[in-house]
Every structure is written in C-alpha cells, then in structure tokens.
Image (tube, rainbow, N blue to C red; front, side, top):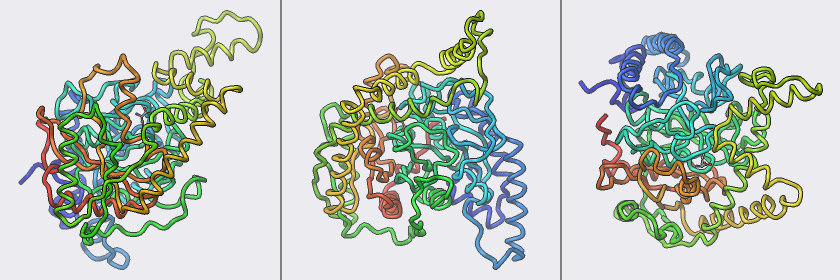
Length: 504
Ligand code: GLN
C-alpha cells in the first residue's frame, strides 16, 4: 500500500468513504510526517494537533453513520469530510494563534474564524495548523516572514515561492492533502508553480475575505493549493459563494464544477504575446509553449492575442498594493492587536501626556514590522499623500482600468488565456533578498490578472534541467473558475507532470 500521505485529496476522501482508512489514521500520518520533515522545511508556523484529532474523531463518527445509512437522506458526505488540510496564517482560525507571518501579531489569538475556514470546518475538514508566509503576504519567496524561511521540498536551498510558500511547501511535501492560500498579486499561483502543484486564484469577490488579514483590499483573494486540479475543485466549491459579512463578496451562485465534462475540443486558447519577453528562462518558455501545443492536440484552437497594457501592471500594482497596505496596516498600533511595546519598554522617560502613547506606537511598529512591510508602508503613504495622490494612486487606478479592458476584449475572442506563471523556476534562498526590484519582477505575469480581478489557475507543465517544477498559468474571466478547472483537469489528465513528487 502506498504511504497514506501520498494520496491526493480525492483518493483520501474515497478511502475514507469506503472505510479503508479513518480520518484519525490520515491525521496521524500527516502529523507524523510533519514532525519528521518540517524541521527541514519549516512550512508550518503552528500545528493544531489537538484540534485536528478532535475533528478527525468527529469526522470518523459522521462517516460511520453515513456508512450505516443513518444520516439524513443518505446524502454523500462532503469530499472534505475527515480530510487533513492546512491554512495560510493570514486566515483566522478561532482560538488559535494567527500572525500573518508578522512579529507584530506574535501570540495574537483569533477571536473568530474566517468564512473560508469556517466553511472548511462545516464540511468536516481537519485543520492541521497554520502555514508560514511572507509578512502580511508581502513577498514572492516566503523569506519576508518574521519567523522562519520556508524551504522548497524540490531543493531545500531554494525558496518555495511566496507569499503562500508555507502552504505550497506543505502540500508538495505531503504534509497535508491541500491548503488555503491568499493571492493579491500572485501568491497562490507562483508558489504552486515553484512547488509543482495546482493552485487557484479565485476571482475578486468569489470567496469571502471576512477573517482574512487584509493586505490590498481591492486585490486580495483566497484560494486553494493541492496536488491535482480535481482537489482544487473540491476546495473551491466548499469555500466559494456569497457571504453577507464581506461587502465585496459577490452574490453570484457557484455552479457545481463538473469535471466529467472536461473537454477542450473547440476551446479557444489565447496566447498573449506580451507574456513571452526577454529575460524569461528558456526552459519555462519552452514548457509553457509545449503545454499550449498539448491543448491544441487535445482539440483546442490556439489564437495569438495581445494584452497591450501588460507592461504597466508592475508599476501600477506596486503603487496600488502598498497604498492599500499602508491604510490597512495602520490598525497595528500595539493597542488593539497583538503584543504592544510600552513607552517604558521603549525607554521613554515621560514628557507630555500624549508622548507615551506615541512612543508605544513607534516602538511597537518599529520593532514589530519587518523591512519589506516598512518599505511598503512608506511607499503607500507617499503615494496617497496630498499633492501626490492624483499623480500616483489616481493615475495607477486609471491605468488599472486599461489593463482590465485588455482582458475584457481578449475574452471576447478567446475562452481562456495560457501563459507562464513566473519568468523563472524557484530561485535560491537569499538570491534576491537584497534587491526588492528583482523580487518584484518575479510577479510580472501574475499581477495583471490580480489588477483585473479575474481568476487564474497554475498547473504543473514540466521541469527545468535542475529538476525544478514549471507551471503554466490559465486565466479566465471573472467568475469563470469552473471553466478554468475543467481545462486544467483535461490538461492534467493528458499529462503526468502533477504526479511527480519531490525527493524529500
Ligand atoms: N509578490 C507580490 C507582493 O509582494 C504578491 C503577493 C501576494 O499575492 N500576496 O505584493
């Protein structure tokens, strides 16, 4: 029998329903592997073993009742019932420490669960713990975490991508059957590509952001990472849909994702010429082009398209995201959330009555935030300042509209767009930490879809000469997740890139 942790989420769910394995056994297998492997990987920030065991036992009772036919209407249980999962630490899980990878939230216990997490719990999933990420999801490598650097299971000297790097490393290393991440500018798609996984960036407003620690409020989206597209579909279906507690959550119904109908015959696939630029690693370009050929062999019609404002996505994003972040992070003042550093601790010796509070703010934010977060707060505050607002933030919003229109026009011509996820495969730990601009460049192919609010899927499509995974990005119109998942599934069925496992 294969190792339990090697099963995909769907295989694990089928074994649970057949009574071949219990949730408790799956959970212990994941916890054992976590204990054995994670000291080298450092993908988890906290492990909620007691919670997981309690949930697993409850799931086993429900599964047993279902098998005896004593549950209501004999309905099939959720595919997530009893399945161990992990959660990026930007999502609140009630009663557990939630830090967003930041020291400023060290020890902060979430008073409620995020809607997306709550929906997993309602489906009967077993939450193993919280995964590492770049601080407040700002980064592309998980090196900006205030706690730990996560390693890529394909090569421990390399980054897993970011900012959902802990989730990606954990799923790829078989510590969990799937995980939730968040994607503001690429943070699900890029780590999925770097770790050889499937990852789904949902359309803006598709999954409730209630209980997600905010980064860029007009960009943030929540989505899953898993070892197959079918697994993503199960996680997507469980978490998507309207939530009155998030004013930006869309009321649109979530149609069931019918993967049995996955067929790309006649599908129009657009290949944007602006996504094949100088500087892209040749193996990445070759693998992505080969994936497009494979789709054509399966019956798709390939069309070259143009998204002419692509080159502005990077500067536009790096104005809008920091501007929104600077506003969102103002709440972390050492009074309302997490540990505060008092004036006395900060060495403040009295003065005016307002001064001790001011010193507390300064000391808390000065020591609690890491360098990248401070950089973004400064950039964002500057871009929003009187006299600069129109020149920077206002202008960026106008260009953002042009980027969105590029996609509107493209989706009149094609059903999906195929392009690279990132210009390179996973880079070495430390390689880009001294050069923020080089790090920002890793995002050039994921930022446009984020600015447009559309959905995107990363699927494994090859390996480079070092044995590092490569991903192809499929983009669909807003609320087009079911279409993307069907195309991704059809591609996956015709290839075996997603079945390879890292050496770890
Ligand atoms: N790397 C991008 C950034 O640093 C995207 C991060 C994300 O999607 N959360 O902002």
